[in-house]
Length: 80
Image 1 (cartoon, rainbow, N blue to C red):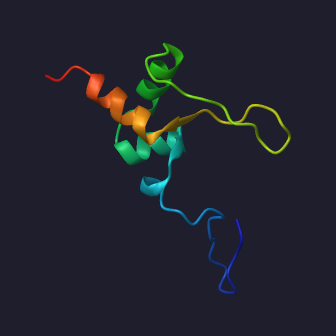
Image 2 (tube, one colour):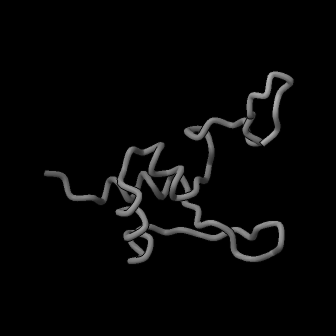
């Protein structure tokens, strides 16, 4: 992360999390206020459709999910 003259860290991506089209599972758990472990379990069970965009080396990167898929998955959860 770049630093300002005062030594404050500035994130490289200035777009707020809630405005991004895709999120990592960690970011999605924060934005949608859901349990990260539950999100990972849903992804492993293929209840949640995810993708792994290539990183700068061309290898699969972190697992990402779209905002639309998160909305679909949350609507599909049973309500008490």
